[in-house]
Image (cartoon, rainbow, N blue to C red; front, side, top):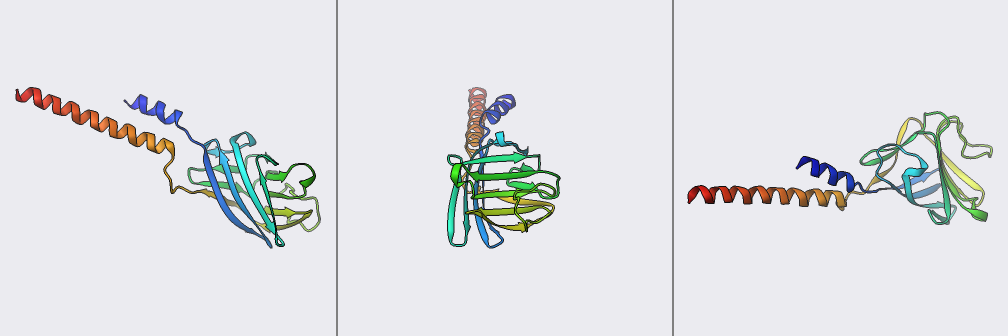
Length: 187
């Protein structure tokens, strides 16, 4: 029975969607990042979908998996069962989502110490988060490991439902077997 439960749990491994609304300098970013369910260090291959709404100076720009590119350099981005984390103190790591084509002047980026999201002057030299719209950016400096986004767990994941159904089925089967044994011994 435990082998069957292990197989079902592995086959029902679900994507995880992390969401956040963050203030960055005089701008803000609203994130929705979906991973393949991997826990630990993440690469570009682990991100299956994203939507990032950049707001600054009254303008709002949406970058998503259809109109933008995502790059992850290094291993500073990681996932837990509840949070998406970034280590701003690691060396030469960054995550960048930028609009493709002519609109590439709008982007969101988080960088560790030693890695630059922007080549413009005035950028923080340490770990930082950036929001850029129309060739102009704002930033917020950070250090250490910070939570970037969290899972909204109001609705159970399909794997949770599957485990509950299997559990109820196993309990029902044991009760039924127990009743049959008692019926035969009473006769």
